[in-house]
Figure 1 (spheres, rainbow, N blue to C red):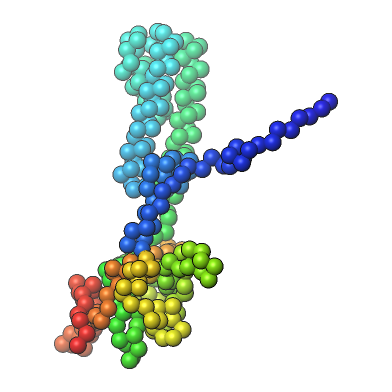
Figure 2 (figure 1 turned 60 degrees about the vertical axis):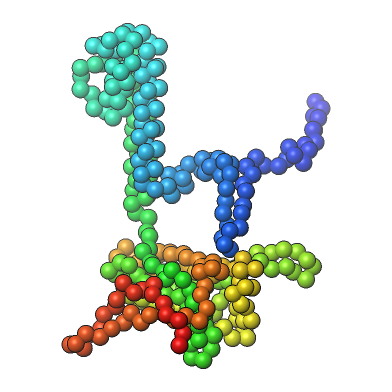
Length: 304
């Protein structure tokens, strides 16, 4: 027996990956194009976990109506196979399908032929599997740990302890604590290597305090811009020219659910202001207590 091997062209060997258009706007990547949705639909589980609740419920409703409509059409192919249902009347068969799929079984309509009983069996199995899948998806969405961390609308490059410093604020919006919180900050910008190749490169920004045992109220992140900093010698014009971004990643353990939570944020070059300072939000009461005024969390003032 002889085997013949056919050589595939480079085009045939390439995976079927949709083309995605990537634009860079204000230092941030923007993915556009109809093919983006195609890539989402190829991973339906991730899509159902990440879309908003209104979209999730709408998608479930559309799927539920579609399944019942398809089963109603299948029942119609069997002729007069459902007792007490008007022959050829779609709505009667549709609502019979709803009762079967949900295991309601009022008894007013029931199958009277072998064909109908076979379809009812298939639909009952479909209903059991569908309920299990939807319950699992709803539980996964409810149980997914999330952080409610607020970041200041702008980051500042100001003078702190006599040194140019990058600063921004973060606040825990829940009435609990994020334990062993850690914050990592990166500078992302366009660069050209010595060989003339374009790169989008990340640089670590060393913080004065990158972790805290308990993040309950606010956190002012501070990065001194000394000769070892990737921001050393940068100006507002250079930040814009190189499409620079400040990218923040905050992680910790939520004390309520005892699970790791994540929060992300980024500042474009236009959201980094120079020679400003944050308004003080810590105040003292007449009886010696302190409180935080979150209404001025985003407020800034020019340096004197």
